[in-house]
Length: 371
Ligand code: PMP
Image 1 (cartoon, rainbow, N blue to C red):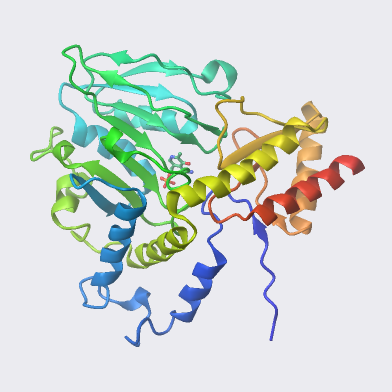
Image 2: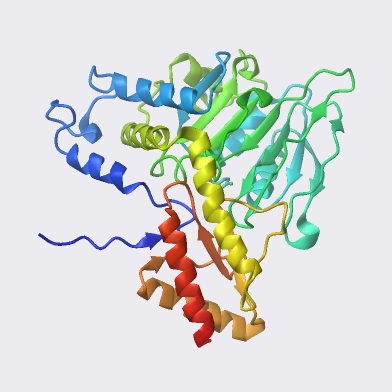
């Protein structure tokens, strides 16, 4: 038999999936549960498919302890479509608060501006988004407050949940983009109005966006005239994410990944595993005179760790290129930083093992000595 040579994959998304999950999917490729069909070939309204989406939703609810009064939706169009759906559905008075912590926040802000007035109440752009600003409790007449919980490109993560209320003391719903940190650690869903996440990092292959939304925030009639049917939360909530054909296979894969998370200790288990990996890697970077992390302490992501070497300018460009190429030759792939920021980035989502991080450090040590 041919031995399959798997790479150690540091991709920021789509990202490595647990090997166990891939093997299971492979075993069921031609015949899932005695149906004689691949899940790819099943009607989404069939008896065979029904339990697949139901189980996936049940696992989301269990692993994130989703309260009863929240809907769990499986949507398409990526997290990017949520940038528009949020303002289109949550608009009331017509003003929303946003915090700008990087590229994805900016995109969310730009999209929201098409539908309502946006107040950007804090930004970390002054230091190229290398930190999360300290936001004092917000008071204002806002329909919601939006922030990006984990900044995939800059490698920062909110270490706290911001607070916001209206002048009359009533709550302002919190909306967060958790695309690159969902289920990497426990999250108190009850503190949020909407939590959304593209699945292609911690949950599944690309193709589905998980949206967890408090029921009272789903409007009966759309505040924005002529909102396309597909962009209305109510349509999807009322139809159990089956208004049209859902991304059936991706949801099936998400169910398998969630089972793997459950088997490995759930959100707490992931937090422990991720903290151990991140501590090891940051500790290595902080004690190196060749490499350094770009995100500030106190704002660092457990999932995406951008780093640079001691070189500057053109020398840096050359050494980064060399690093990425030699790492790939050593079986450590997808380590180039995002095209907008350069350098290197190791994305170490749930599926990355501690051994994978150790292998990266061993390579980095060797590379530093040689360069
Ligand atoms: N938000 C964050 C934090 C992301 O990392 C990404 C994708 N990398 C997006 C939004 C955009 O997601 P999608 O490609 O699913 O639209």
